[in-house]
Length: 248
Image (cartoon, rainbow, N blue to C red; front, side):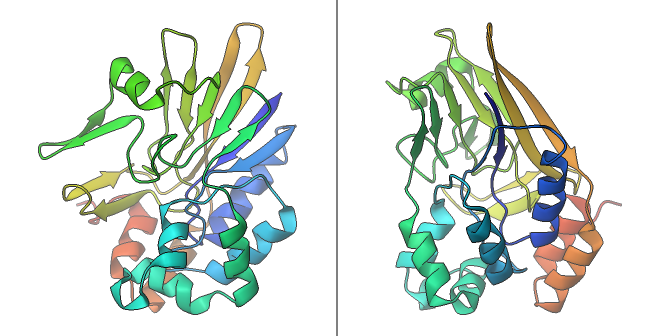
């Protein structure tokens, strides 16, 4: 089996279309979507229509949960843009998505970890900053999950962890946003330093799961200009540069 994993599109339709075009050249058996699909500064409704038509195996992320359950007066700007823009049928589609999804007996889709849509799986965040998680730390979060392959998103950082028990955890990175700031649970930034869209291809082999982390060029300047027109200078910079501040 050959799977293309996409995640964290965040309403960036231009990036999504470029990734789907690249996937179309890879002869995959299945495309899966790991959540945080629409919230952002760009095109939530148009992105929803594109994905609904494709019918991909899809789970919800923390932003879907927030759009569906939080008081609009308490929403952040990205969730509020989605909440105000999405039609009732698109919100119903979000509500129908599961939090996790098993693909056969040995592949599990999660957004954050198997038990949380907010916890970072392959990174550790402390008051001192963000670092890659150790295999032992990843194993603790994987717990008793039996799937040989766990696909996760949330952090936007492409990363692969292979555990001593043979399990493989893959974060394909973000299709739609290569830098962001968050206050949870500590103020921090995640910056990939390149505006290219990210996704992963995982292939079952006799030795286990082979992982290819891919990046795709798209018109990020057009996306950045759209974000700016929508009043989001933070997103404009992140989309154009892959950093929260323009490099010197």
